[in-house]
Image (cartoon, rainbow, N blue to C red; front, side, top):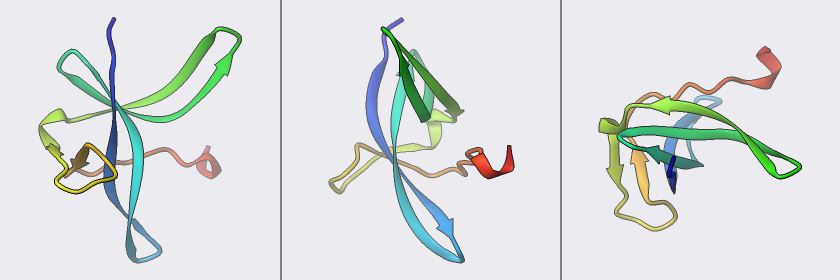
Length: 81
């Protein structure tokens, strides 16, 4: 399994305003994943990934990230678990 890692920028609403968040983005074949969280245990890295639609990714024209995501990204919130 070979992963390509990039940075994703997504416009996320925050308290009625728009804010941009940057997240790690990984490709596994033709599938795309946003890395929500990760932790290291010994020699292993455990990742919480959310699969996204790769057709909604667009190469970013400005600096700071490699891709923009044009879809709706719903990430779990720890306070709701």
